[in-house]
Length: 310
Length: 291
Image 1 (cartoon, chains in turn yellow, orange):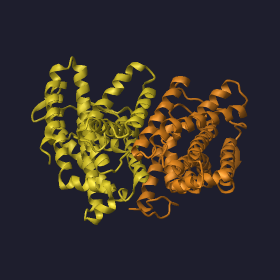
Image 2 (image 1 turned 120 degrees about the vertical axis):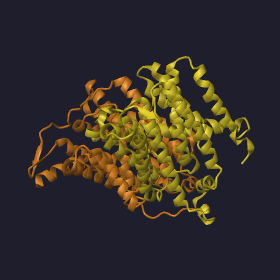
Image 3 (image 1 turned 30 degrees about the vertical axis):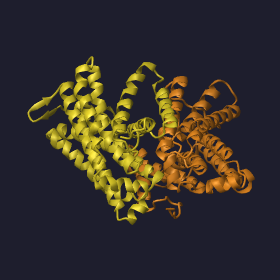
Image 4 (image 1 turned 90 degrees about the horizontal axis):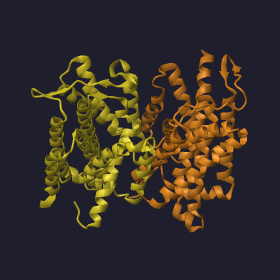
């Protein structure tokens, strides 16, 4: 492991520490919290898509499982929010493990189809089971208590999420440089070659899929508590695509790219709000332009240009 | 019992024909370029919306329908020239995001130009239902099925009996070899986007008198067309048609006998099960990987 591998992490932590003191108002603080939450989700997804080379077009489904576990279990069954969050993560992990084996026999576009289908089924179920989920209108989420504190204002949330983000970046950096991470990159490079040298490719694919699903479910719970409300849109196809776009625009297989992608695409819809009615058109055009001119994503392209890797 | 079954079958086959046309569109583009075109659903939507717009503008029906197919075809070609050709050989996920970007642009522009309301198109030959064994069949369903069947026959003829069609087939088998024998593969790419958009639009036009249309109907229709294409085995033309009809019929049966609320989930449950047991769809055949 090169010794400057943590330089970027220190920079991220420094930015996270300074940010709340320079943000002009609570609107920007709220935006920062959303960016950080998305960044954690995208980190997990990038492990799957960028490093292991397995596409998922249904990841918002796992977010939805976590978010709705945190909404439904405390509201209807009086569960403690942390227990509900754990149950959501467990459910998402189990579901991922259950479908992963048959799914990861598939490749490329067939895999895209299967994950897309899985995500859509989850979002349709959330929309239809109105007696539990409030249906298309969504439902409120009770607030989150942590060790006797009530997490109520944005500033407290900011520090929680900032801590989660720092830990996730640290964990991702380590994971990539572990035997597990090397196995993932190997199977991305060539599945046959990695099998030949003894990598159990199915086991690794399943493991990374389950891990990213659990990541997503936990962050879904966090989002639900932070926003105080969940709706089925949170789990739908378009949101899955948004997440994949964050991965690709930031840069596949790039830890810091995940952060850049999450920050840019969280800010973009806010910035586009001024286009009144044209948001979708502009958003679509930006997606296309980015992919046409920066197919490798922002961070890897810039890193190559200035001659220093991550 | 029988009449109910027939009723579900009729509505299933009718919608299934639209999915089949969309699936054929996916297949054409996939064969020419290995791209899964997620904007396919928007061509379906565009066809329906433009047909509504042109008929309301007072154009005679045949002219309106022709324009409603030609304009999406032009849009398809535009996407190919501006967004697909420049990134030849990019990763599949990059291409997927490009076509999704294109679909957002089309959907967004349609919402800006035509508004977000729901529109209807008068049926081509009246609304008097035909009774068959206690079930009713709309005359428009006959139009949908008839024209879809005609299109399938024409496509079969084109790909098996004409030089142009054979050139397209050859490109789908081996692009490099096709280029070596003098086939203009960028023309093939151009044609496949034009044809696929026109096919999608045709499906959208035909079904609109039955199901209505609005700027956002393309997403689900397109995704179900994708399910149909994968079900039949990506790249297989006959598979796409069978897949489309199968998805339509099972969706209608599921909605009728099991749960109408979960109607939209049925194609996706179906495709997951099929892929679990037949990883390359119904007619995908075996594949070998080159190392």
